[in-house]
Image 1 (cartoon, rainbow, N blue to C red):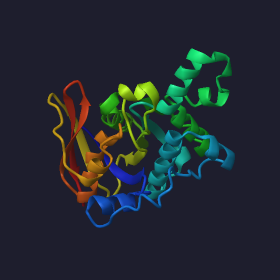
Image 2: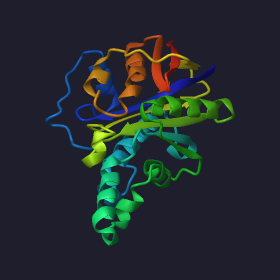
Image 3: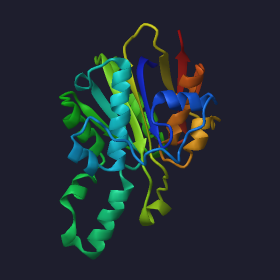
Image 4: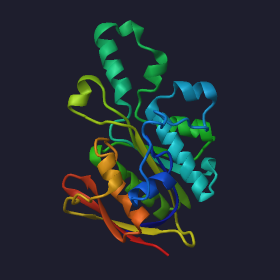
Length: 260
């Protein structure tokens, strides 16, 4: 069994721009104002010109990563990190496929640079000045659970604390027919060996599928590919003591939570 303390939480979706708003929505306290909400976050970690050019998936990943570090009182440059995304940036992948099929000599070097799955991890290490190891994971609906296993394994084998980020954006073009995802969603945790007063999670793999868990966040963001991570954030908001996430191939990651 692997375990860690949850030191800090970050969250962003359209109309719920931080964990405080998301938690209040999960508890039924407020309604989001999606009409007035910005279409994408503006991560202050990046210089202004990079902030404008970065794809929305990178923007949301960096926004929640920095928010989780601030909530934990941790220096972003001092943390190892794990970035988990089901699809990376499908909008850019669609552009790359369409351009290669029609006008391959016109490929944009900037968009090619942003097409790789570890683009968000790369922007993070540059923006934060982080020299610690970073990992990019893709496992479809099991992405966040596998990212959590990776982060907890790093803590169990010597890291003091690890940043875990889950994110996905919308799918476009023909790829949307096989890898559908809508909206923009990101959430992050700073996990550590111990922190007085912080929730503690213990996890183990189970040979059964995770049952669907009702919740307002999961219902609101159900169309996004990273929605399978939301039952954990609902459990943190409600101070529930058990939850399960899909971990792939009919398996689940069982999570036991304790709250001081």
